[in-house]
Length: 556
Image 1 (cartoon, rainbow, N blue to C red):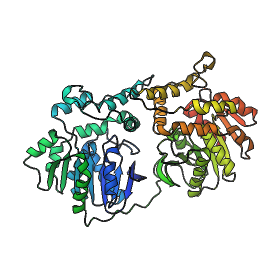
Image 2: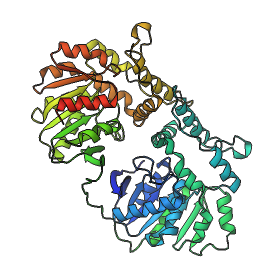
Image 3: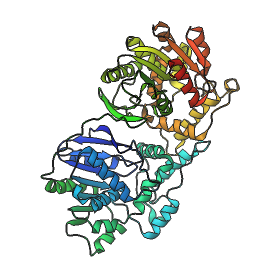
Image 4: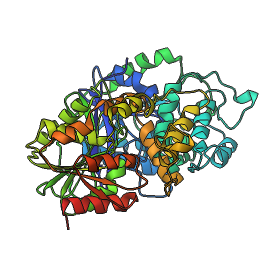
């Protein structure tokens, strides 16, 4: 059973840092492998019974911004972590590092020993110098989007191969392992983190591979346990080391013994460490786009904001399924004159579903609660594609809150179209061992530019437009969908269940509909005009969206 954790975002210098927190008491910092926290959740659950456990995203992965340097070292990651502890208010803590996180835990203990009361190194990655050179040259091929999406499937298959050979690029008998290549959910979660890191995904791996783990262990000044479940060159080197401090224990034991051994180790050494006190939330006004994790009801949702809070508020509702990351250019522009807020709704973008009700009315209620929590009394609402359903529902439920609606290419479908789109437009994403599901998502997003609707590839459905098929932009959209692949079908069904056209007809707030020829639901623009809504043709692309929003809002 996964532990219950809250999610938080901090500003450390100019970077956003994301972490999860569980339990209460003295703090224990858990540094997982760069690509997934799942293997360390057993430790989080056990430790959180007596301690506050903090689980940080590695810089450049998840929701933590990358470090400023082009090629950061393990020392750079350790120093950044020490800066983060300053902001969180932790002077001294226990630390557990696992896999790649073990490298950065060792570096933190070596460079900032006063911060670490007790250290656990769990499965440190270890390779010979020849293996390191080979991995730096071949293990981390570049991540480059291509027109047919096969870069996604290639990445998937490489991670699946890691359950067969380690490293994956050495398919020989001596490198065969007995991993579980059947755990497709885990592979997809790993890929989502790496996809999000994009071209920067190799940075933390290179830092880990290039570090001197034995030298760091020999310099430890606090009690430490270094443990593995299998023998390897790192453990061999440590056992042969003549300089290892007496306070450092090197051990090999089965996985089922890890939790009780680590718990006992920390229990003996964490006495006298001050209990963790969560930092007070402080408004961040020195960034163009600010990000926060906000608790609304039972959900932790990612909220972006820009501009001065005292200015007239504009709420941006992204296309659904999907998050608000594509709005950042619009936010930066509107934020010059307005207070702009955009939300990743539960089950979309970087806001997990976590049992939330995925319906249009529930989403509208969440946005109303957010507006109330921010003290916003009157909003202009800008919504893109399926987000128009939530915007309309919010205006219908809270007419005094919503002053006007700007809808960019809304899905103004008739009842027959809604019924067809409900099941066909946002298909369930069924994970496949061969990664074919990734190509299916790529095809669907790319086909939105080529056919109307995308799932009808007949000659009659051809869109005769200048299609936007740029692989980088397609890749961003596909990755946005994959972040919450489990919710994709349910969110799409909720959007197409909603009687958008009928709701808009009954609103008292003015509604302006914008469309460009290559947007997804442009074919429904004629229906907007016949319904008496104000219709504006805009230029394609992000700049056209910005111009439409500014003109309709009469900003500048």
